[in-house]
Length: 274
Ligand SMILES: Nc1ncnc2c1ncn2[C@@H]1O[C@H](COP(=O)(O)OP(=O)(O)OP(=O)(O)O)[C@@H](O)[C@H]1O
Ligand SMILES: [Mg+2]
Image (cartoon, rainbow, N blue to C red; front, side, top):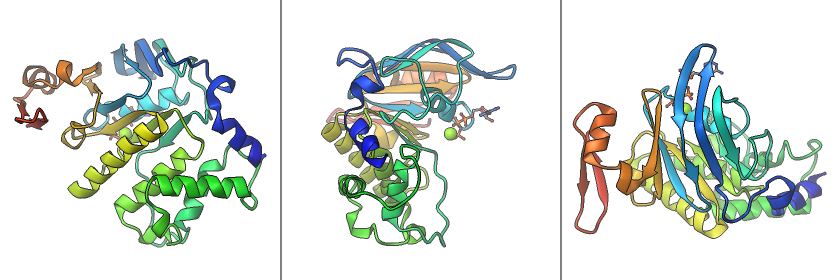
């Protein structure tokens, strides 16, 4: 059904979402998550609007990946409510593109970049088998969008971390998602590659009018791009615009240590100490 998958994904609105331009792409209301009797976070009350680029920031183990899995319909809420593209989360929604937290690709992985991206369609097809012309076009287009066409024939295990990350983003773009969930795409990249990936994601956001939620540990590589931030700290979820939350006072309180937000003369923020 390969063709049907592509047709459906080319216009996911309507079939799989009740989304209208004015509605929030993601809306949490008093939401909390627990595993057994352990509450991971609570008090999530925020919305992502269409086309926003939002960072999800917090220390290890605070529940960032869990929040993405809530949006994917993989983890139920313990309380409150959440809507994604106008409806409760459900599994296998092609309107959501997801890059999971880095599985490191083994150095001896012989799969070509092209085939790794093609795997993004598995799950929307009835089975394996040779790729159709429409699928090959979709893969070429996604490779182009992330600037990976030049090395798509190489075994992915031999590619750099930044090149691998681009292929994983291409894979997530195959179904033309309206919401892109990226779990730590900057982890283990050097500063230059971090910068390039942030700019790539921003270009995709603009070109494809997609809403982006990107998980990261460090705010600084993201600050020039973000429209909003969601922090998870000590089980609390705090969300707001950069003006609202990226202040020395609030960050020092959140991190319980002196944090200084430096604002450069051209208006860029830089966080020291978090
Ligand atoms: N299915 C599960 N059952 C029980 N506990 C879980 C489950 N999934 C996650 N947890 C726990 O929930 C907490 C949050 O995990 P999560 O992976 O969401 O954190 P994270 O913020 O993404 O961390 P990191 O920055 O290390 O990726 C952790 O303590 C984790 O062990
Ligand atoms: Mg995680």
